Image (cartoon, rainbow, N blue to C red; front, side):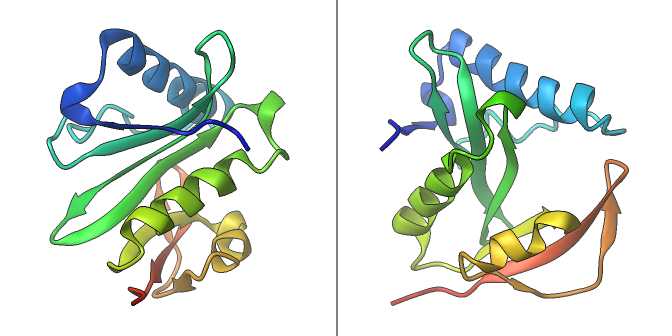
Length: 146
């Protein structure tokens, strides 16, 4: 079981912020060539929580963030380094979010090709595809559990 670090935005160290932005830069800007800025004013908000799995050197291998958006818990910026994919790391992070906040409705904008993967965690598609950062996405929601 990989070690998951959970850190509220106000508690992040400079190195952690650097590592978070590094993985997102590698995955979104370089690999996926997203056409929108990654730094969006959410990362350091008091309601933003960052979750990640790092290697022994502290390099983040898989990451996501969650925050409140119009009263709903939103999940975003899910990223895993190419060499670390296929190990279930993102799934471990998503399960941690569900364990912590699953009693609330959870929302996300899934890259369209990952729609079935998110569905396996109980998310359902709630609207038509939309374009974000030059990539097809679908809105998905997971209902609150008791």
